[in-house]
Length: 326
Image (cartoon, rainbow, N blue to C red):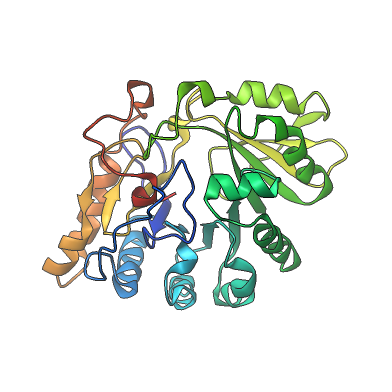
Protein backbone atom coordinates (compact mmCIF):
# COMPACT_ATOMS: atom_id res chain seq x y z
CA UNK A 1 0.00 0.00 0.00
CA UNK A 2 1.21 3.51 -0.82
CA UNK A 3 1.07 6.07 1.99
CA UNK A 4 0.30 9.79 1.74
CA UNK A 5 3.99 10.53 1.10
CA UNK A 6 4.25 8.15 -1.90
CA UNK A 7 6.12 5.46 0.03
CA UNK A 8 5.34 1.78 -0.43
CA UNK A 9 4.66 0.31 3.03
CA UNK A 10 5.19 -3.45 2.94
CA UNK A 11 7.37 -4.29 5.96
CA UNK A 12 5.95 -5.21 9.39
CA UNK A 13 8.25 -5.28 12.42
CA UNK A 14 6.73 -7.29 15.26
CA UNK A 15 7.95 -7.17 18.85
CA UNK A 16 7.21 -10.58 20.36
CA UNK A 17 8.06 -9.63 23.93
CA UNK A 18 9.37 -6.82 26.11
CA UNK A 19 11.49 -9.34 28.02
CA UNK A 20 15.18 -9.87 27.35
CA UNK A 21 17.99 -12.01 28.72
CA UNK A 22 20.33 -8.98 28.65
CA UNK A 23 20.10 -5.43 29.99
CA UNK A 24 21.75 -3.25 27.35
CA UNK A 25 22.40 0.19 28.81
CA UNK A 26 20.80 2.18 26.00
CA UNK A 27 17.74 -0.04 25.86
CA UNK A 28 16.63 -1.46 29.20
CA UNK A 29 16.92 -0.54 32.89
CA UNK A 30 19.24 -2.66 35.02
CA UNK A 31 16.36 -4.17 36.97
CA UNK A 32 14.75 -5.45 33.79
CA UNK A 33 11.08 -5.08 32.96
CA UNK A 34 7.93 -5.52 34.97
CA UNK A 35 6.25 -8.88 34.47
CA UNK A 36 3.11 -7.65 32.75
CA UNK A 37 1.53 -11.09 32.51
CA UNK A 38 0.28 -13.06 29.55
CA UNK A 39 -3.01 -11.18 29.31
CA UNK A 40 -1.31 -7.96 28.23
CA UNK A 41 0.85 -9.28 25.40
CA UNK A 42 -0.45 -10.66 22.14
CA UNK A 43 -0.77 -14.42 21.95
CA UNK A 44 0.98 -16.21 19.11
CA UNK A 45 -2.42 -16.92 17.59
CA UNK A 46 -3.26 -13.22 17.68
CA UNK A 47 0.08 -12.31 16.12
CA UNK A 48 -0.53 -14.77 13.30
CA UNK A 49 -4.01 -13.39 12.71
CA UNK A 50 -2.64 -9.85 12.51
CA UNK A 51 0.09 -10.87 10.07
CA UNK A 52 -2.49 -12.64 7.92
CA UNK A 53 -4.62 -9.48 7.92
CA UNK A 54 -1.60 -7.31 7.16
CA UNK A 55 -0.87 -9.28 4.01
CA UNK A 56 -4.23 -8.13 2.65
CA UNK A 57 -3.04 -4.51 2.59
CA UNK A 58 0.29 -5.34 0.97
CA UNK A 59 2.70 -6.40 3.71
CA UNK A 60 4.99 -9.22 2.58
CA UNK A 61 8.09 -8.83 4.78
CA UNK A 62 8.12 -9.59 8.52
CA UNK A 63 10.85 -9.03 11.10
CA UNK A 64 10.52 -10.42 14.63
CA UNK A 65 12.09 -8.30 17.37
CA UNK A 66 11.81 -7.63 21.09
CA UNK A 67 13.05 -7.39 23.79
CA UNK A 68 14.76 -10.57 22.73
CA UNK A 69 12.49 -12.53 20.37
CA UNK A 70 14.14 -15.88 21.09
CA UNK A 71 12.97 -15.86 24.72
CA UNK A 72 9.37 -16.06 23.47
CA UNK A 73 8.08 -19.61 23.83
CA UNK A 74 7.06 -21.41 20.65
CA UNK A 75 8.69 -18.87 18.34
CA UNK A 76 9.62 -21.71 15.98
CA UNK A 77 5.95 -22.59 15.46
CA UNK A 78 5.05 -18.94 14.91
CA UNK A 79 7.73 -18.63 12.23
CA UNK A 80 6.45 -21.80 10.55
CA UNK A 81 2.89 -20.48 10.58
CA UNK A 82 3.89 -17.10 9.13
CA UNK A 83 6.10 -18.77 6.53
CA UNK A 84 3.05 -20.75 5.43
CA UNK A 85 1.27 -17.59 4.29
CA UNK A 86 1.73 -17.37 0.51
CA UNK A 87 1.99 -13.57 0.58
CA UNK A 88 4.99 -13.59 2.95
CA UNK A 89 8.30 -13.91 1.13
CA UNK A 90 10.74 -12.90 3.85
CA UNK A 91 10.91 -13.59 7.60
CA UNK A 92 13.84 -12.33 9.65
CA UNK A 93 14.76 -11.63 13.27
CA UNK A 94 16.90 -9.20 15.20
CA UNK A 95 18.57 -10.91 18.16
CA UNK A 96 21.36 -10.45 20.67
CA UNK A 97 22.54 -13.92 19.64
CA UNK A 98 22.79 -15.48 23.10
CA UNK A 99 20.24 -18.22 22.37
CA UNK A 100 20.57 -18.35 18.61
CA UNK A 101 23.20 -21.03 17.98
CA UNK A 102 21.28 -23.75 19.81
CA UNK A 103 18.01 -22.83 18.05
CA UNK A 104 19.38 -21.96 14.61
CA UNK A 105 18.65 -25.18 12.74
CA UNK A 106 15.06 -25.36 14.00
CA UNK A 107 14.54 -21.69 13.15
CA UNK A 108 15.82 -22.16 9.61
CA UNK A 109 13.76 -25.32 9.11
CA UNK A 110 10.67 -23.40 10.20
CA UNK A 111 11.23 -20.77 7.51
CA UNK A 112 13.47 -18.10 9.01
CA UNK A 113 15.42 -16.55 6.14
CA UNK A 114 17.72 -13.96 7.69
CA UNK A 115 19.12 -12.76 10.99
CA UNK A 116 20.58 -9.51 12.32
CA UNK A 117 22.82 -9.70 15.39
CA UNK A 118 23.32 -6.82 17.81
CA UNK A 119 27.01 -6.51 18.67
CA UNK A 120 28.61 -3.26 19.83
CA UNK A 121 32.14 -4.40 20.67
CA UNK A 122 34.72 -7.11 20.02
CA UNK A 123 36.18 -6.78 23.52
CA UNK A 124 34.72 -9.28 25.99
CA UNK A 125 34.78 -6.89 28.94
CA UNK A 126 33.06 -4.14 26.96
CA UNK A 127 30.36 -6.51 25.71
CA UNK A 128 29.71 -7.56 29.30
CA UNK A 129 29.57 -3.90 30.34
CA UNK A 130 27.22 -2.58 27.64
CA UNK A 131 24.87 -5.59 27.92
CA UNK A 132 25.22 -5.98 31.69
CA UNK A 133 26.33 -9.59 31.51
CA UNK A 134 26.39 -10.80 27.91
CA UNK A 135 29.23 -12.98 26.66
CA UNK A 136 31.03 -12.15 23.42
CA UNK A 137 31.75 -15.84 22.77
CA UNK A 138 28.01 -16.63 22.63
CA UNK A 139 27.40 -13.98 19.99
CA UNK A 140 30.41 -15.06 17.95
CA UNK A 141 29.19 -18.66 18.00
CA UNK A 142 25.78 -17.47 16.81
CA UNK A 143 27.23 -15.42 13.96
CA UNK A 144 29.30 -18.29 12.63
CA UNK A 145 26.37 -20.68 12.98
CA UNK A 146 24.27 -18.37 10.79
CA UNK A 147 27.09 -18.30 8.22
CA UNK A 148 27.38 -22.09 8.38
CA UNK A 149 23.65 -22.39 7.65
CA UNK A 150 23.99 -19.87 4.80
CA UNK A 151 21.33 -17.56 6.20
CA UNK A 152 22.60 -14.78 3.95
CA UNK A 153 22.82 -11.88 4.24
CA UNK A 154 24.01 -12.12 7.86
CA UNK A 155 24.07 -8.62 9.35
CA UNK A 156 25.66 -7.12 12.45
CA UNK A 157 24.08 -4.05 14.03
CA UNK A 158 26.65 -1.85 15.78
CA UNK A 159 25.53 1.23 17.72
CA UNK A 160 28.43 3.69 17.49
CA UNK A 161 29.07 5.36 20.86
CA UNK A 162 31.87 7.85 21.40
CA UNK A 163 34.00 6.92 24.37
CA UNK A 164 32.84 3.32 24.24
CA UNK A 165 33.51 1.71 20.86
CA UNK A 166 34.76 4.51 18.59
CA UNK A 167 38.26 3.06 19.02
CA UNK A 168 37.02 -0.26 17.55
CA UNK A 169 35.47 0.96 14.32
CA UNK A 170 38.28 -0.40 12.14
CA UNK A 171 38.40 -3.69 14.04
CA UNK A 172 34.66 -4.18 13.64
CA UNK A 173 34.74 -3.17 9.97
CA UNK A 174 37.47 -5.76 9.46
CA UNK A 175 34.84 -8.48 10.03
CA UNK A 176 33.25 -7.45 6.74
CA UNK A 177 36.63 -7.77 5.05
CA UNK A 178 37.40 -11.22 6.44
CA UNK A 179 33.92 -12.79 6.30
CA UNK A 180 30.74 -12.53 4.18
CA UNK A 181 29.15 -10.31 6.84
CA UNK A 182 27.32 -7.02 6.45
CA UNK A 183 28.39 -4.76 9.31
CA UNK A 184 25.99 -1.87 9.89
CA UNK A 185 27.10 1.10 11.97
CA UNK A 186 24.14 2.97 13.48
CA UNK A 187 24.16 6.49 14.88
CA UNK A 188 23.36 6.60 18.61
CA UNK A 189 19.80 7.90 18.91
CA UNK A 190 18.22 9.81 21.81
CA UNK A 191 15.38 7.35 22.20
CA UNK A 192 13.78 5.30 24.95
CA UNK A 193 15.87 5.05 28.11
CA UNK A 194 17.82 8.31 28.02
CA UNK A 195 19.84 7.74 31.20
CA UNK A 196 22.76 6.39 29.15
CA UNK A 197 22.49 8.84 26.26
CA UNK A 198 24.27 12.17 26.01
CA UNK A 199 25.03 14.34 22.95
CA UNK A 200 28.76 13.92 23.62
CA UNK A 201 28.46 10.20 22.83
CA UNK A 202 27.12 10.83 19.33
CA UNK A 203 29.29 9.95 16.32
CA UNK A 204 28.06 10.85 12.85
CA UNK A 205 28.10 8.35 10.02
CA UNK A 206 30.36 10.72 8.09
CA UNK A 207 33.00 10.43 10.83
CA UNK A 208 32.63 6.65 10.93
CA UNK A 209 33.06 6.37 7.18
CA UNK A 210 36.17 8.57 7.31
CA UNK A 211 37.68 6.30 9.96
CA UNK A 212 37.03 3.18 7.88
CA UNK A 213 38.51 4.79 4.78
CA UNK A 214 41.77 5.32 6.63
CA UNK A 215 42.37 1.60 6.09
CA UNK A 216 39.91 0.30 3.50
CA UNK A 217 38.74 1.44 0.10
CA UNK A 218 34.95 1.59 -0.02
CA UNK A 219 32.87 1.27 -3.17
CA UNK A 220 29.16 2.05 -3.23
CA UNK A 221 27.41 -1.29 -3.17
CA UNK A 222 23.96 -2.57 -3.99
CA UNK A 223 21.30 -2.55 -1.31
CA UNK A 224 21.42 -5.75 0.71
CA UNK A 225 18.25 -7.81 1.05
CA UNK A 226 16.01 -6.47 3.79
CA UNK A 227 14.91 -3.08 2.44
CA UNK A 228 16.46 -1.30 5.39
CA UNK A 229 17.83 2.23 5.73
CA UNK A 230 21.55 1.44 5.42
CA UNK A 231 23.74 2.74 2.62
CA UNK A 232 26.06 -0.14 1.78
CA UNK A 233 29.69 -0.03 0.69
CA UNK A 234 31.75 -2.96 -0.49
CA UNK A 235 35.22 -3.22 1.02
CA UNK A 236 37.62 -3.64 -1.89
CA UNK A 237 39.18 -7.09 -1.64
CA UNK A 238 36.83 -8.15 1.15
CA UNK A 239 33.97 -10.64 1.37
CA UNK A 240 31.24 -8.53 2.94
CA UNK A 241 30.10 -4.93 3.15
CA UNK A 242 29.79 -1.99 5.51
CA UNK A 243 26.39 -0.38 6.03
CA UNK A 244 25.96 3.15 7.37
CA UNK A 245 22.68 4.09 9.07
CA UNK A 246 22.21 7.79 9.78
CA UNK A 247 18.84 8.50 11.44
CA UNK A 248 20.11 11.83 12.78
CA UNK A 249 22.73 13.32 10.47
CA UNK A 250 21.08 12.25 7.18
CA UNK A 251 17.57 11.02 7.89
CA UNK A 252 16.10 8.47 5.48
CA UNK A 253 12.40 8.94 6.22
CA UNK A 254 11.57 9.41 2.53
CA UNK A 255 12.46 5.74 2.01
CA UNK A 256 10.79 4.32 5.13
CA UNK A 257 8.66 1.29 4.31
CA UNK A 258 7.74 -0.06 7.75
CA UNK A 259 5.13 -0.16 10.47
CA UNK A 260 5.79 -1.52 13.98
CA UNK A 261 3.58 -3.80 16.07
CA UNK A 262 4.41 -3.74 19.78
CA UNK A 263 4.25 -6.79 22.02
CA UNK A 264 1.11 -5.41 23.68
CA UNK A 265 -0.65 -5.07 20.34
CA UNK A 266 -0.24 -1.45 19.29
CA UNK A 267 0.55 -0.31 15.78
CA UNK A 268 3.16 2.42 15.64
CA UNK A 269 3.74 3.95 12.23
CA UNK A 270 6.98 5.72 13.16
CA UNK A 271 9.63 4.76 15.71
CA UNK A 272 9.79 8.36 16.92
CA UNK A 273 6.05 9.11 16.95
CA UNK A 274 4.08 8.40 20.13
CA UNK A 275 0.75 7.92 18.30
CA UNK A 276 -0.38 4.29 18.34
CA UNK A 277 -3.41 2.24 17.27
CA UNK A 278 -4.65 -0.46 19.66
CA UNK A 279 -5.01 -3.69 17.69
CA UNK A 280 -5.29 -5.88 20.76
CA UNK A 281 -8.54 -4.18 21.68
CA UNK A 282 -9.74 -4.57 18.11
CA UNK A 283 -8.97 -8.29 18.21
CA UNK A 284 -11.21 -8.67 21.23
CA UNK A 285 -14.06 -6.75 19.62
CA UNK A 286 -14.21 -8.06 16.06
CA UNK A 287 -14.92 -11.53 14.77
CA UNK A 288 -13.59 -10.96 11.24
CA UNK A 289 -10.60 -9.18 9.78
CA UNK A 290 -12.41 -6.26 8.14
CA UNK A 291 -11.86 -3.91 11.08
CA UNK A 292 -8.23 -4.98 11.35
CA UNK A 293 -7.67 -4.11 7.70
CA UNK A 294 -9.13 -0.66 8.32
CA UNK A 295 -6.77 -0.09 11.24
CA UNK A 296 -3.71 -1.18 9.26
CA UNK A 297 -4.84 1.16 6.50
CA UNK A 298 -5.25 4.01 8.99
CA UNK A 299 -1.74 3.45 10.35
CA UNK A 300 -0.32 3.65 6.84
CA UNK A 301 -2.37 6.69 5.83
CA UNK A 302 -1.38 8.63 8.97
CA UNK A 303 2.33 7.70 8.86
CA UNK A 304 4.28 10.97 9.26
CA UNK A 305 6.52 12.24 6.49
CA UNK A 306 9.56 12.24 8.76
CA UNK A 307 10.59 11.80 12.37
CA UNK A 308 10.98 14.74 14.75
CA UNK A 309 14.08 13.44 16.49
CA UNK A 310 15.68 16.88 16.46
CA UNK A 311 12.95 18.06 18.85
CA UNK A 312 13.81 15.44 21.47
CA UNK A 313 12.12 12.33 22.80
CA UNK A 314 9.52 14.31 24.73
CA UNK A 315 7.78 13.62 28.01
CA UNK A 316 4.68 12.34 26.22
CA UNK A 317 6.74 9.57 24.60
CA UNK A 318 7.11 7.31 27.60
CA UNK A 319 7.90 4.09 25.75
CA UNK A 320 11.35 2.56 26.13
CA UNK A 321 13.08 0.96 23.16
CA UNK A 322 12.37 -2.56 24.42
CA UNK A 323 8.66 -1.66 24.56
CA UNK A 324 8.52 -0.28 21.03
CA UNK A 325 10.56 -3.07 19.49
CA UNK A 326 14.20 -2.90 18.42
